[in-house]
Image (cartoon, rainbow, N blue to C red; front, top):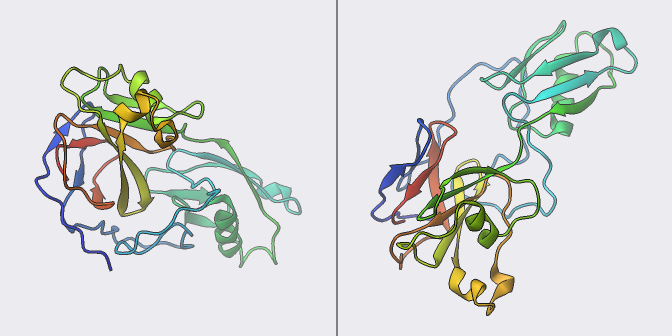
Length: 242
């Protein structure tokens, strides 16, 4: 078990209205709800045990994703469904199923359970028709802090350039926040000066979907590799120290 202490956290909302909070020792408590069918996603791990990331992770279904559900042996049940804000989809002839946070193979297993009383060992195919575009966030002392679409392989230095470059008040000590699991950020400290000077170009980390780059106004001596966070909504913040 990893004990985390987050020091002197100050949050400043940048652009959107609903906050995310980094707090000492806080963990996300999932809201209690009744789920007619539920499959535990493979990426859901203990909040106290940040896990190593998969080398080639599968896409995880999100709200507002549009999926085509096909039944090769029962085409009359073919349907297009949209993931609702509560994470559920409504199925023809089988009620509601919670699919947010599942991969496509996990969703297939959930649908088979949902139709167990209707079909005998059904064959079900699920295809993503429309999904959320991969995004990254740059906050802190940059020209245009905000959220940007991740259209191609992008490094931290390139992400900062996309966000308008460094402000005169910025430090070249940069932090990259990556979602380790549903309850933890993994934090990596980078020295942008060495990267820009060509000394340690290989340390210019590649951005992944959902990552946040934070450029502080002053050097932060103490930080932890894993920082817990709670999500109240889908926006972002900038911690001044952690």
